[in-house]
Length: 180
Image (cartoon, rainbow, N blue to C red; front, side, top):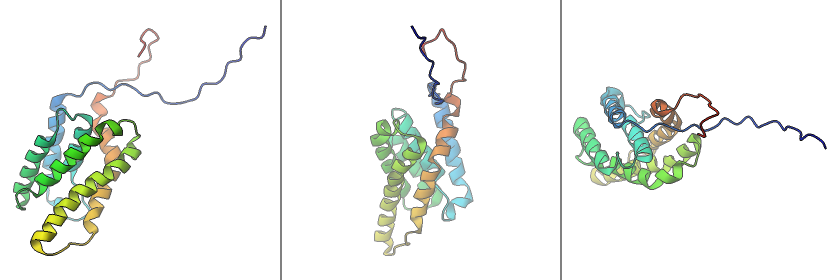
């Protein structure tokens, strides 16, 4: 009888389990993102809304802790800070959280770049709603350059995921006695 030949195993990096997220870390990242949004470079075009990006990330990954009420309150804070019409950012962030919660189960199946492709319409629709209201109330349309913010936010999605999930990653320590 011949001995079975050993086939080389494919070199696929295994997926590691993530630790549960600390609720204090969620609120700390939202607070820090809000502070980043308070910096004066938010007035410049092409700068993504960091708070919206972090809010969508936590709405996707922790929808029971960060939801539409959190988004609405953070939106009101941004409206007060920016001296804009009360409710513009609140509407935008609430729409972001709503669509992110709708997609949260679906997005977990995809790689970060494919997730970015799927959250791009979410960012776009939230900004489109705000600019339609602004255009209706002011009687002018700012052009389509505002859409670049949603593209930049979608491109930053994998980086945000890598940074925000860093504390949850388990150290790699293979052990033959544990099944997981």
